[in-house]
Structures are given as structure tokens and as C-alpha cells.
Amino acid sequence: MMQRYSSFEEIDERLRILRLQKEIHVEGLKYNLHRAKSDLYPKRLMGGLGFSLQQMVLTYSIQRLSRLFRKQERPNQIH
Image 1: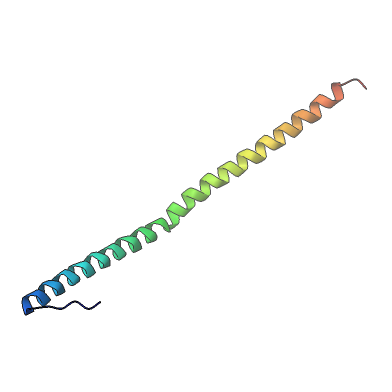
Image 2: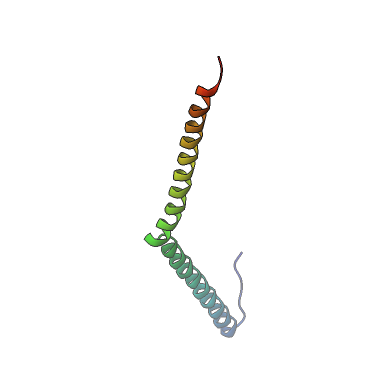
């Protein structure tokens, strides 16, 4: 629905409001872009990768140790 204006002052006020809304949206986009860039920064990515790598190494080590202990227990059992 089209809005009807009764004076140029109303038009000017509406245009000012629209310009301010546009500026707010542009600043929001700039902020989100900056945040996305910082999230994709190599140091930050490596930090997450390092944690995942630590988890994988720890899981692998625990599995190997449990197999080793199971193999050591078997010779002592009587058949």
C-alpha cells in the first residue's frame, strides 16, 4: 500500500528515516563481514584443528594401550 504525504516535510522526514535505516543495515553487514573474516583467520582455524588433532591422538593412544594390556593378560590365563 502506498503512503500518501501531505507535505514536503513529511517526505523529507521519511527519507531521513530510510537513510538512517540503510546506514544501520550497512553497518550491520560490515560487522558481520568483519566477524566472518576473523572467524576464518588461519590462527583461529588452526586452534580448532589443534584441539581436534589432540582428541584424535588421545583416542588412538587409549585404543593402542587397551589392546596392549589385553594381549599381556592373555598369556597368564590357564586354558
